[in-house]
Length: 178
Image (cartoon, rainbow, N blue to C red; front, side, top):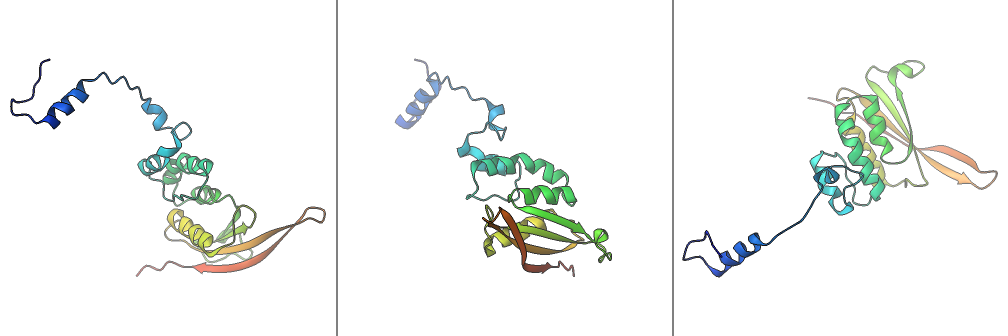
């Protein structure tokens, strides 16, 4: 067998050359690796990194991870809009309501909005979850805007399947540029 290695090549070099000569008939469908729906679950974190997913939680289900990757490009295209804020909040699976300053009666301060989020059920009412929600809002909201995060606890009572919602906390978040 013909070699391109020098006459003083080591055994390791010869072994690597032999491996390189082996018929490696490995077919990889590159397009499936870039598709969040067909990418193997073990490679999802790398795909998320490649498309610049802003928020990634290892505790998410596989479906939530695939949804985050799918929405990443749309969120980046629309950052600073109400649509991006809704998409980012949808990843948490909680019911949200966004009220902008001009939708309030009387009208609120310009460039402010309220985010009301119902916690409970699939979205636990913990400080960690609230911190992650606030970080997600901060990443996609308009930079000039200030907001109030209002959380409510959703409790399902087995009397006629009634749903009771009451305010849990209010968190003012202001960003001041100096």
